[in-house]
Image (tube, rainbow, N blue to C red):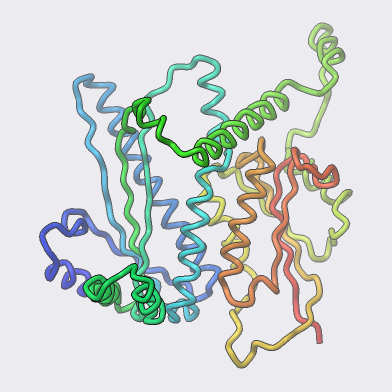
Length: 385
């Protein structure tokens, strides 16, 4: 806190952090995976803070139509002093960049929240104007630095001159905090009006193709959701049941149905090694937090330079994370989510050799993986003698 106060004092009056309310939190976890889960927890809490402010502003508007909503901005400094793996700058930065990339990719996921919004729009239900809530993170570290080799190469290519090089070096010094630190900034404001047609017309063909793919995914997800809620595939017998009052008795708990399906259909299922966890989460940051919290329950320590030798592994604990309300209508989105989890796992030394991630989903392209509810499977491997 003293370091931040001194840094802001020495900066210009235009420093954005000098105008915001700044709070400080300390991540107490020593284990790497638990620290990653803690980072996602702070992202989730920051987004919830923006959501609460949005609701309060909408209440003000409902009471006073002439009320002009005010934008919201808060900064939180998250210090991570006890995680040994993060004391190395390159290890820390690699994990933070993987987390940031995963969160950017997650904006394209077709979550149940998005499907529910589409359903309301298609049903003609009046909805309030959405707000834009963004949470961004920037890393600080005692050894923060841009590699001199990178600067030399950029200078040779003519991309930077000597003055720009000095500015980069000053920026590096400014980000050398006493401990590994993550600056989180949450902003909430009413969404701007749609762009004019002249601006939209300037979009590149690549961007247009990307938007078309997203729309198609949304349509397919919507179709899947409506199909699931229409009952069984046999419309004739469904109609008879409605007419004569016959009801099909099914287990009320989808978790129990999924567990039974996995036991019968997963060739790697072993009752002695299997664990089950479920959550009704709907938010992406919550999903990442939930998954890495489960990963952190396994005792994993990144290998040191001395211990980096080739080893043999055998299958160990197999955890089934059932997420019935996350991306239940889009197997593609669940696979994308799993890919982002793998990206973070690959950023942690040696972890990809010890754990693998796979998915099961009602809409999976492989019939053998079409489980009743979405499931993320965590397979751990242990060393053999």
